[in-house]
Image (cartoon, rainbow, N blue to C red; front, side, top):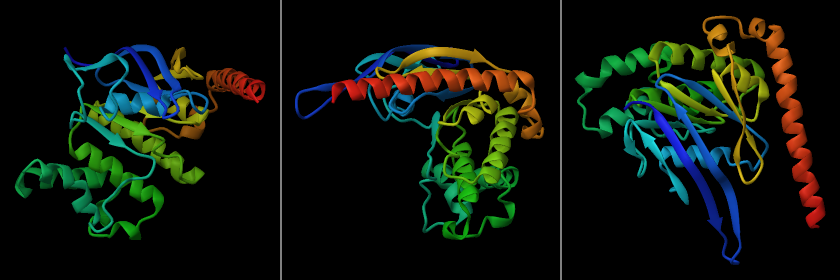
Length: 268
């Protein structure tokens, strides 16, 4: 059975003072192979916690993650992570960073070299393969992080605010690259973002999560990711449904933030 299933996930963090924080409550959804899903919501709604549970970095208090028919019990190469900061190895050059996973699996250079060179080319890193990481811009470093993730050939790519630190132009270019790689590789992708525009562009499915305890508030099925593959993303944003959906989600999240602020003021 292929695909990813999130089954009644709840997560409670117990604090040293004896109290606890309910970060997630009864979150369930299924992703088919090759789906692209963005996750959006106010700060503290459990987006990153959910991603870390899917990655196997955290064990949920209740529920389980099922991947390709088996229960997730920890990190595994079938699930690759791209972080907000690339988490790259500064002492290695670009090629060595990208080939790190295959080398750790014990593959010989003859087994991975062609695949790694292909990834460097498709991510626009072909001319930078021998460069040190510190010589690259933030956008180029995120390209390396994405290529390194793909070199492990995961079934699911998990992206935690991967473009959040980039300037607007670089971010748009990287959004186009994510869409291109999604369509070319057929990978399942889950992307966490705080940007409504990015969630709309990079979400074939878009989840809006409600504030703590985190839970699914609303799900959208959108055409903009498919429309954006190989296209000018600024043209996609001119679609009338894009604008109306953007305003609807912004209003939704604004109301949630107001609710959170109201709770904070009442508790003081």
